[in-house]
Length: 248
Length: 258
Image (cartoon, each protein chain N blue to C red):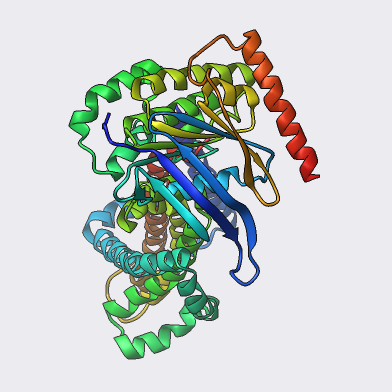
């Protein structure tokens, strides 16, 4: 029932976009804005043979960057949220570095980590990790002290506190942070894929543009947007499954 | 139920809040003995340190001076099983009813298999069978209270500490829940300290009624209550007379504070 409504909303959004695109294409009548049906035919032709491999590369970079960011950011955020001393120590560091546009660090990253895979993954990591740290810290810090009381009196270990209280209590904030960071990560990924690689959606789209192959370019843009839709859809589903306790 | 002695004994307990250099004394020089297998009701004006005393017994706070013993042992949450029912019931919002009930036993690493018959019986007694997969926010206050009671009694604690457990409920539900508690308590006879601000509740459930006064919090008088946990008619004449006496004493204590 609810699933149906969500699906319908997505379909409506897609149709609206397509109609707008179509109208503009018909009005402008330029090769730079081809009509959607041609693009979709091209997409069908080259998807399995060419685009898939680029999509997989992009997905892998996002997944690796995200895993790295969670693996490092979660424990730091947890320590900062639970132990005041860590927070006092690390907050200035986090606040000083968080506002720096991470893309500005790309030249340095490329010098240090090369132009290959590592610098791209590190870039995504840098974008997501701060959001994760701050979300987890705030999530842990806002847990009321009384919530721990009945577990303390039972002599619960830190591991048990983490499992029963800290992790589930901070989980929704964590998911939200990942979602917010994901949009930035995808757009920056696009940028980093325009050099130092022959694979990835960024490379594919820029390459099609340079070859003045607008149909390919649009096919790539559609796939990139679907990739984002897939990731956000996964996050939303995860949230619906795991956060039912706080949804109305 | 264990045959151990779980008498709660407070001797000269003083508790301070705030910095050691400028302490605020929440309770001063409290002496209280709750014999094994009885219920003690702590009653008094707000801010008299009732909850603070409970926290000390729960091992959540250390007294600045004085001792707290349970069956002659120090309060240590690793040796003793302490059941604490906080004012807001202490249910974890991200766990469903079933997991909330089992939480205490899980944290204590109790044998779930052995507890199974009791678990089933408690669900039956408390009418929770159809609510197992609901989350706390989907429950009424009375239902949340039942879950908290199921958790506390399934744990089979050495002592049970309850902080205004029935205060958030409407009058009828409150009386019903007091009876539910009474039924469970008679079966298990766990040594219990109950903080309340209802005279009727103290009289209905407490073998002892400790009247507290504030600034600083201390026990003004301990009244032995022959009707504690007897489940007697709440409207009986002699119960009513005692309740009037308690009320008058409380009023004097509050006037004395002002």
